[in-house]
Image 1 (cartoon, rainbow, N blue to C red):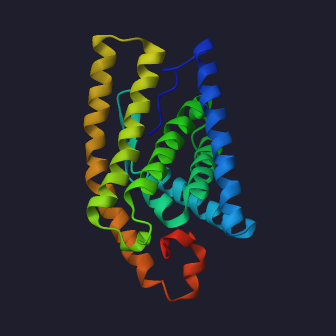
Image 2 (image 1 turned 90 degrees about the vertical axis):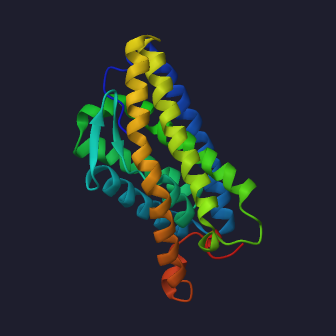
Length: 224
Protein backbone atom coordinates (compact mmCIF):
# COMPACT_ATOMS: atom_id res chain seq x y z
CA UNK A 1 0.00 0.00 0.00
CA UNK A 2 1.77 3.10 -1.28
CA UNK A 3 -0.58 5.73 -2.62
CA UNK A 4 0.94 7.23 -5.74
CA UNK A 5 2.53 10.70 -5.48
CA UNK A 6 0.17 13.39 -6.73
CA UNK A 7 -3.05 11.67 -5.65
CA UNK A 8 -3.11 14.17 -2.77
CA UNK A 9 -1.08 17.35 -3.14
CA UNK A 10 -0.97 21.05 -2.49
CA UNK A 11 -3.09 22.50 0.29
CA UNK A 12 -4.98 19.22 0.65
CA UNK A 13 -1.86 17.65 2.11
CA UNK A 14 -2.46 19.67 5.29
CA UNK A 15 -5.29 17.33 6.25
CA UNK A 16 -2.96 14.35 5.84
CA UNK A 17 -0.55 16.00 8.29
CA UNK A 18 -3.42 16.45 10.77
CA UNK A 19 -4.50 12.80 10.52
CA UNK A 20 -0.91 11.61 10.87
CA UNK A 21 -0.45 13.82 13.94
CA UNK A 22 -3.59 12.33 15.46
CA UNK A 23 -2.30 8.82 14.75
CA UNK A 24 1.03 9.75 16.34
CA UNK A 25 -0.72 11.03 19.45
CA UNK A 26 -2.76 7.87 19.83
CA UNK A 27 0.36 5.77 19.26
CA UNK A 28 2.08 7.64 22.08
CA UNK A 29 -0.85 6.79 24.36
CA UNK A 30 -0.62 3.11 23.41
CA UNK A 31 3.13 3.18 23.97
CA UNK A 32 2.70 4.61 27.48
CA UNK A 33 0.17 1.89 28.30
CA UNK A 34 2.52 -0.78 26.93
CA UNK A 35 5.43 0.46 29.05
CA UNK A 36 3.19 0.41 32.13
CA UNK A 37 2.37 -3.26 31.45
CA UNK A 38 5.90 -4.33 30.53
CA UNK A 39 8.93 -2.01 30.31
CA UNK A 40 10.63 0.38 27.92
CA UNK A 41 13.26 -2.15 26.78
CA UNK A 42 10.57 -4.65 25.84
CA UNK A 43 8.66 -1.99 23.90
CA UNK A 44 11.82 -0.92 22.06
CA UNK A 45 12.75 -4.51 21.15
CA UNK A 46 9.27 -5.29 19.83
CA UNK A 47 9.19 -1.99 17.92
CA UNK A 48 12.47 -2.89 16.24
CA UNK A 49 11.08 -6.31 15.28
CA UNK A 50 7.96 -4.66 13.86
CA UNK A 51 10.02 -2.13 11.88
CA UNK A 52 12.19 -4.86 10.37
CA UNK A 53 9.06 -6.86 9.57
CA UNK A 54 7.43 -3.86 7.92
CA UNK A 55 10.49 -3.25 5.78
CA UNK A 56 10.48 -6.89 4.68
CA UNK A 57 6.78 -6.76 3.90
CA UNK A 58 7.23 -3.70 1.71
CA UNK A 59 10.55 -4.43 0.03
CA UNK A 60 11.02 -8.22 0.01
CA UNK A 61 7.56 -9.77 -0.26
CA UNK A 62 5.82 -9.61 -3.65
CA UNK A 63 4.13 -6.26 -4.37
CA UNK A 64 2.70 -4.75 -7.48
CA UNK A 65 1.17 -1.42 -8.55
CA UNK A 66 -2.58 -1.32 -9.08
CA UNK A 67 -3.83 2.05 -10.29
CA UNK A 68 -3.57 4.69 -7.59
CA UNK A 69 -1.64 2.57 -5.11
CA UNK A 70 0.32 -0.66 -4.65
CA UNK A 71 -0.81 -3.98 -3.26
CA UNK A 72 1.46 -5.22 -0.46
CA UNK A 73 1.26 -8.08 1.99
CA UNK A 74 1.50 -5.74 4.97
CA UNK A 75 0.53 -8.34 7.62
CA UNK A 76 -0.54 -5.62 10.02
CA UNK A 77 -2.75 -7.94 12.04
CA UNK A 78 0.19 -10.36 12.35
CA UNK A 79 2.35 -7.61 13.85
CA UNK A 80 -0.45 -6.66 16.22
CA UNK A 81 -1.07 -10.20 17.46
CA UNK A 82 2.59 -11.05 17.98
CA UNK A 83 4.01 -7.76 19.20
CA UNK A 84 1.15 -5.61 20.48
CA UNK A 85 -0.60 -2.49 19.22
CA UNK A 86 2.02 0.11 20.17
CA UNK A 87 5.06 -1.73 18.74
CA UNK A 88 3.09 -2.58 15.60
CA UNK A 89 2.13 1.08 15.10
CA UNK A 90 5.64 2.35 15.78
CA UNK A 91 7.15 -0.36 13.58
CA UNK A 92 4.83 0.37 10.67
CA UNK A 93 5.64 4.08 10.85
CA UNK A 94 9.40 3.52 11.18
CA UNK A 95 9.57 0.81 8.53
CA UNK A 96 7.66 3.01 6.09
CA UNK A 97 9.99 5.92 6.85
CA UNK A 98 13.16 3.87 6.35
CA UNK A 99 11.85 2.51 3.09
CA UNK A 100 11.07 6.01 1.87
CA UNK A 101 14.37 7.51 2.99
CA UNK A 102 16.67 4.88 1.53
CA UNK A 103 14.80 2.89 -1.11
CA UNK A 104 11.83 4.86 -2.45
CA UNK A 105 12.39 8.60 -1.92
CA UNK A 106 9.59 9.43 -4.35
CA UNK A 107 7.17 8.08 -1.71
CA UNK A 108 8.32 10.50 1.01
CA UNK A 109 5.95 13.35 0.01
CA UNK A 110 3.09 10.90 0.64
CA UNK A 111 4.40 9.73 4.02
CA UNK A 112 1.64 11.34 6.09
CA UNK A 113 -1.01 9.92 3.76
CA UNK A 114 0.48 6.43 3.83
CA UNK A 115 1.17 6.31 7.55
CA UNK A 116 -2.42 7.32 8.34
CA UNK A 117 -3.65 4.63 5.96
CA UNK A 118 -1.69 2.02 7.92
CA UNK A 119 -2.12 3.14 11.51
CA UNK A 120 -5.84 3.93 11.71
CA UNK A 121 -6.84 0.42 10.49
CA UNK A 122 -4.38 -1.01 13.02
CA UNK A 123 -6.10 0.92 15.81
CA UNK A 124 -9.45 -0.41 14.59
CA UNK A 125 -8.06 -3.95 14.66
CA UNK A 126 -6.87 -3.50 18.24
CA UNK A 127 -10.27 -2.13 19.26
CA UNK A 128 -12.04 -5.08 17.63
CA UNK A 129 -9.73 -7.52 19.41
CA UNK A 130 -10.83 -6.08 22.75
CA UNK A 131 -14.43 -6.82 21.80
CA UNK A 132 -14.27 -10.22 20.07
CA UNK A 133 -11.44 -12.00 21.89
CA UNK A 134 -12.67 -13.44 25.21
CA UNK A 135 -10.75 -12.19 28.24
CA UNK A 136 -9.62 -15.71 29.07
CA UNK A 137 -8.21 -16.45 25.61
CA UNK A 138 -4.56 -15.91 24.72
CA UNK A 139 -3.90 -14.80 21.16
CA UNK A 140 -2.04 -18.04 20.36
CA UNK A 141 -5.34 -19.87 20.98
CA UNK A 142 -7.45 -17.79 18.61
CA UNK A 143 -9.78 -19.53 16.18
CA UNK A 144 -9.67 -18.97 12.43
CA UNK A 145 -12.97 -17.04 12.53
CA UNK A 146 -11.54 -14.53 15.02
CA UNK A 147 -8.29 -14.14 13.08
CA UNK A 148 -10.29 -13.59 9.90
CA UNK A 149 -12.27 -10.80 11.57
CA UNK A 150 -9.13 -9.03 12.76
CA UNK A 151 -7.34 -9.36 9.44
CA UNK A 152 -10.49 -8.36 7.55
CA UNK A 153 -10.87 -5.16 9.57
CA UNK A 154 -7.25 -4.19 8.96
CA UNK A 155 -7.40 -4.84 5.21
CA UNK A 156 -10.81 -3.22 4.83
CA UNK A 157 -9.50 -0.20 6.70
CA UNK A 158 -6.54 0.10 4.33
CA UNK A 159 -8.81 -0.07 1.28
CA UNK A 160 -11.24 2.43 2.82
CA UNK A 161 -8.47 4.95 3.51
CA UNK A 162 -7.03 4.54 0.02
CA UNK A 163 -10.51 5.22 -1.34
CA UNK A 164 -10.88 8.27 0.87
CA UNK A 165 -7.56 9.75 -0.23
CA UNK A 166 -8.36 9.16 -3.90
CA UNK A 167 -11.76 10.84 -3.69
CA UNK A 168 -10.44 13.59 -1.44
CA UNK A 169 -7.45 14.34 -3.65
CA UNK A 170 -8.86 13.69 -7.12
CA UNK A 171 -12.60 14.21 -6.72
CA UNK A 172 -15.51 11.85 -7.30
CA UNK A 173 -15.75 10.72 -10.90
CA UNK A 174 -16.14 7.60 -12.97
CA UNK A 175 -12.37 7.46 -13.29
CA UNK A 176 -11.70 7.61 -9.55
CA UNK A 177 -14.48 5.10 -8.84
CA UNK A 178 -12.90 2.75 -11.35
CA UNK A 179 -9.45 3.20 -9.81
CA UNK A 180 -10.75 2.47 -6.32
CA UNK A 181 -12.71 -0.59 -7.42
CA UNK A 182 -9.68 -1.95 -9.24
CA UNK A 183 -7.47 -1.49 -6.20
CA UNK A 184 -10.07 -2.94 -3.83
CA UNK A 185 -10.55 -5.99 -6.03
CA UNK A 186 -6.81 -6.62 -6.15
CA UNK A 187 -6.63 -6.39 -2.36
CA UNK A 188 -8.97 -9.37 -2.02
CA UNK A 189 -5.89 -11.51 -2.70
CA UNK A 190 -4.33 -10.15 0.48
CA UNK A 191 -7.50 -10.84 2.47
CA UNK A 192 -7.35 -14.47 1.35
CA UNK A 193 -3.74 -14.91 2.40
CA UNK A 194 -3.26 -12.81 5.53
CA UNK A 195 -5.49 -14.83 7.91
CA UNK A 196 -3.52 -17.94 6.97
CA UNK A 197 -0.27 -16.06 7.62
CA UNK A 198 -1.65 -14.96 10.99
CA UNK A 199 -2.53 -18.53 11.95
CA UNK A 200 0.88 -19.80 10.83
CA UNK A 201 2.61 -17.09 12.88
CA UNK A 202 0.46 -17.88 15.93
CA UNK A 203 1.21 -21.59 15.58
CA UNK A 204 4.94 -20.85 15.44
CA UNK A 205 4.65 -18.57 18.46
CA UNK A 206 2.71 -21.22 20.36
CA UNK A 207 5.60 -23.66 19.90
CA UNK A 208 7.84 -21.09 21.62
CA UNK A 209 5.55 -20.61 24.63
CA UNK A 210 7.80 -22.50 27.05
CA UNK A 211 11.11 -21.14 25.74
CA UNK A 212 13.05 -18.00 26.50
CA UNK A 213 12.11 -16.63 23.09
CA UNK A 214 8.54 -16.11 24.31
CA UNK A 215 9.75 -12.98 26.13
CA UNK A 216 10.36 -11.33 22.77
CA UNK A 217 6.64 -11.11 22.08
CA UNK A 218 3.70 -9.24 23.58
CA UNK A 219 2.50 -10.65 26.93
CA UNK A 220 -1.07 -10.84 25.58
CA UNK A 221 0.10 -13.39 23.02
CA UNK A 222 0.42 -16.05 25.73
CA UNK A 223 -1.58 -14.79 28.68
CA UNK A 224 -5.14 -13.55 28.85
